[in-house]
Length: 277
Image 1 (cartoon, one colour):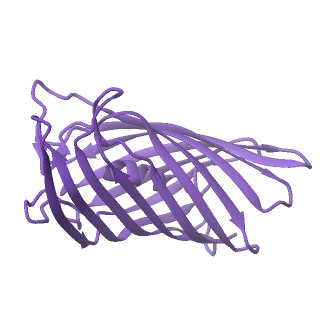
Image 2 (cartoon, one colour):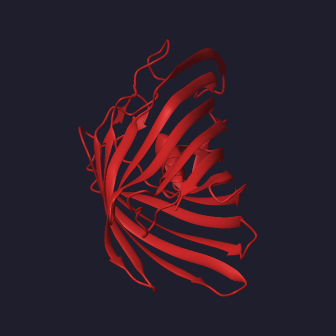
């Protein structure tokens, strides 16, 4: 579930473009999920869990110099609640458990590899810092983080397009995420496209993000509701509108196409951003 939220936040502004010194993209966001089940593998799901997750976050891309930028994603406050669970025999168990706290933080550097009129290419290294907690609540099975250290190496390729009437871009990316402990390493990949009518100040953006687990071994293990091996594909539709040349609002919807141990529910997000170019 947290990975789904994270992937919905990762591709917000940069892509193949890298912020130069004096440039930046800064966003406060609010996301929420309300679910009655979870994916148990492929497109199958089990309607057994009533839970909610609300995340208040801050995302930043800040230019440090020519061709290099600092990127940070911080869930400032994560609220995780569980109302009830349906047991194997169909009996509903009422659970009133809720926790709140800071979530796992991502911090990284993005480097410009190639910048031309047709293609923009960048590479990034992102570290996932386990400052959240995987063992909270009365049953110690609620969480604000997964308790493991990530190192994600990723490359983005973006192509701008348009004419006097329409502006747009497309981005493809791929990355490898090294995970600590008993968690399985992952391959990340996806694509994104955005389009805007010139001078409209309104953007429509679509994304597909996927994670494929590496060698899962013979036995799948779980640690505080986190699967050792996660694979999923999600899609996202986002709108963004500039209220003035620097300030804007975003709204997005993220859904899952398939996954394992992933909540069967969309992620709704709203955001307020500042874009300094």
